[in-house]
Image 1 (cartoon, rainbow, N blue to C red):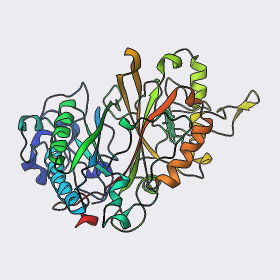
Image 2: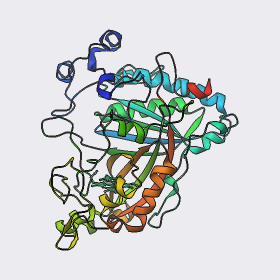
Image 3: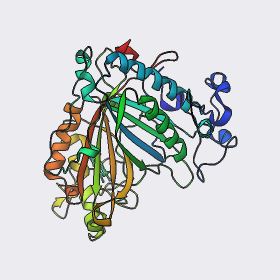
Image 4: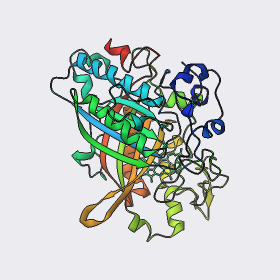
Length: 399
Ligand code: HEM
């Protein structure tokens, strides 16, 4: 199935699975659906996403309020056939849970009901392509991120053979879905790490808006927009073959030193990124969605500092290449009783080696933000193409 995210989206809310087929071609409005079920937040639009299509739906949909990232490692006996069995099981779970129905064998079926915008996105780590029969299927550029000077990576937040990204506007739905998916995986794979984050991608009136990270910055403004040619080129794997419609994901757990950040003037904070704090507009003027003017000078100096994060990450500094970012804020218990705060940074791109690695190297060398940010986790995954009704995740390579 093709089309923009909104054309693929089915606003079914609580109308239930029986209504799903009938309603697929006649989307209801979010407001209409909101009247069918309990409120999740003051003005959170409610909708149910289709699990079917060329791409897994969680990639292009706006980030939900609660997201869990879960990595598992294959058990030694899990070969490509067993992986196929797990993918069929997970597909059944995903189809049910996304429709607000209990997963097959659900031990807490009541928790499946109030499903709010649930998406489950599934990926495979590089080691999967070491399995006999799958070595020829490794997507181009799928590689772990090479060590960076500023990294302080910890094993407990890094790598993994399978990834689940589970998001919804209701945290109970997320926890329940993760529980089901991890339980069904038990004969095949063991939990490696689990990280949860939150995001507010809504304006005061409930319409989608760029969210803020814990530095207070508007984060995501310059992202390519789903449904555009630039987005398609940036994100979807381009080679024909089993991985068409897939993408790759880089996940970095990045600690943000808020105590030190708070000691810096707002002018310095804004200079470190190249955008204004109140509205995310470039320091060279305009509004949030406007591009930076990297050639502008002010008082004889570049208006966007040479070490500004958004300059160094800009396509003009990266051979025209882009990535598609999604951030999740998190807080966790840190060292010596302190709170750790940071960003679970997700980057989607067609090719990690070509698009992400050179950009990350440039930022590692020069980025002003390095003073306050440290990556403590790193993982990469091939995010599987979508599947059709009757099909299953990974069926283009495993069947
Ligand atoms: C905690 C870490 C990070 C923070 C707080 C952060 C914050 C920001 C902010 C506030 C912006 C400007 C608004 C926007 O366009 O979204 C931005 C832009 C951007 N960032 Fe980051 N970022 C972080 C890490 C990274 C990493 C690791 C990468 C890639 C390796 C990256 C790549 C980009 C890109 C490509 C842009 C858009 C540049 C443009 O085209 O204008 N960021 N970031």
